[in-house]
Image 1 (tube, rainbow, N blue to C red):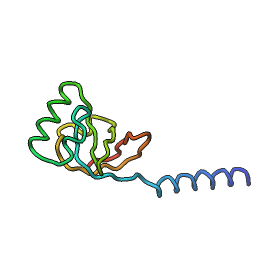
Image 2 (cartoon, one colour):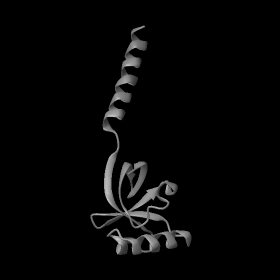
Image 3 (cartoon, rainbow, N blue to C red):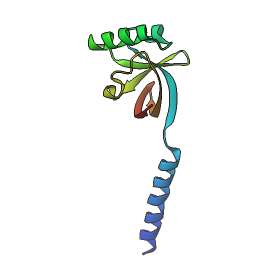
Image 4 (tube, rainbow, N blue to C red):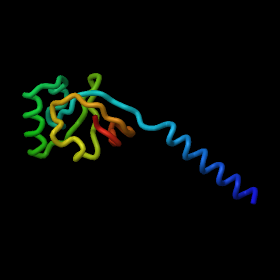
Length: 102
């Protein structure tokens, strides 16, 4: 019984810590893998270029603080090219896996 209780407490603690940690947030401009930092500032011209490049095979990226981050899943960024957004999620090896996009 005490082993089960200890296991249950450990699982609950792990779940609470995971929920408490949440995701990190980044704010930047959505660009594409072809143009990168060229679209560091949001604009209508950047939006058209980014969406055109993505249709041609490039991937959406986030330009924030002079750095370029890969974005996943790509479908969350459709239509957001050239716009300033806030992405919340997890990062591993310069790739942000988005939980939410504002």
